[in-house]
Image (cartoon, rainbow over all chains, first blue to last red; front, side, top):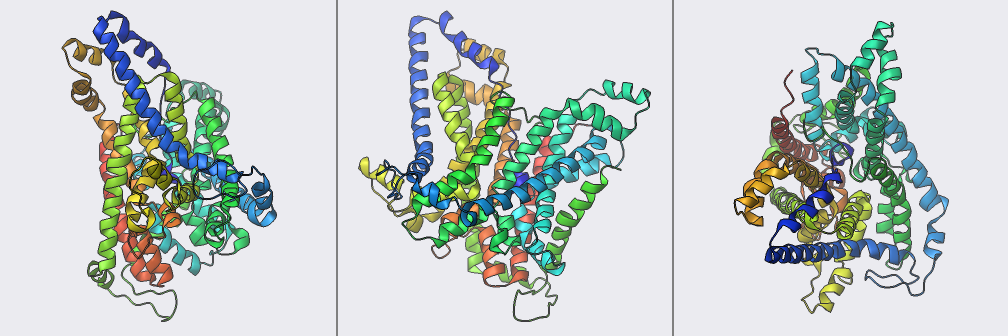
Length: 305
Length: 278
């Protein structure tokens, strides 16, 4: 689920190049040779692992343009774009993608706005409630959301929220909120408090300070939270699978699954084409994120506490 | 109070269901049939612990979590991070890209790709065939192994990124000092690097355990828990009891067990992080 599958990671690669170059020159001849051969071994092992990693991905790409795709990795024979043509229609692609956009977009928006609001007092004020609340938030990020889906289903049946896009959106937002608040708070901690004090002396209220001073200084943080929340939800299968019934309301994560089980064995090409279309938004968002923050990203705090 | 909207949403949609979960777990609630729901005490739990299918699911969950998260993702992630420190730039870039690509893809797509990969006429057997190694109908004979490998394929990027970051923070002087004292690469790793990053190791172990504990879509897309119950981990067993056998009460009891295990790990995780004192 979104809150627990979203990833904290940092990787500043800047210092690395200088470091690896350092070892060689001072070394004696035999050692330089050893360093070189161990580097070769490392490269070979990594390439082998990459090949194993790449086979399933490559299969998807090749099958999508193959008129006679099978489960075996093979070159397209003949090459065709028909698979894409066949899935690009309202029922198969456009509606599920739009549903996903409504559900995940709405939930992401809600989650981000509420995270900002909640993170502000948690980052700025010291109150008796602060610590218990932070512990609760952190604790909930670890809970397996999969486990609450059955009670959520029963609860939704009782209050008549089953098969409701609004209900599902609210639940998705709530389930990513703990992680969102936690990340947002850590980003907000990085904004110096001095600037706020200046604004306060000029008579600005808390909310004004938050929107006018703090927020403009932490757009990178807000972007990270937004993209990660969205990616987590876009791939989420179990929540909409349980809470939505009407095929017309299903997002792509569930419709791709139905597509998977409903079609006979000759449709691998179409399935792969659809899988690619469905994956494009998250891949693009991820690339934007990685680029913006220079390769890796400092989702610091999520792991460092 | 700007905390209020979040607190309300969390209370209604997370705390609420958890409370319901505790309550339902002690009832005989059903989806269909008997209209009344009665309080049945610990019946669901006694039943579960006497149910060979439940015990099978517990065992498979254990295999799945230990095999794919604790051993698989964690060790491979660490190994990749360590090797990438030494690798040349293009190799590093390629490895990074493919490992992360597998992780970014939506869960069901990953499940579909892994299904195709492990299918009897799929790519894995084609590779084994070309290497003259014995083939296997993976999804039929060893579905839980296939699921474990699939989860390693999909999830290792997370550990890899955590460890890359951690290794970056290891002071270079420490490594050099150990090198001066004549420590070989393995000794440096065991005696210097790993002790320094032990906190990252612990947190990563917790997080991958929690993530893997709740994996549903990946296994469901690959095998639906089958054949029979050979890849039926707790989340899938819970789903099947509640929705296919319509036993909401029983399914919820299983969910509660899962939730408690998650809560336990979550608590250890918080202990490890220890919020800064203030």
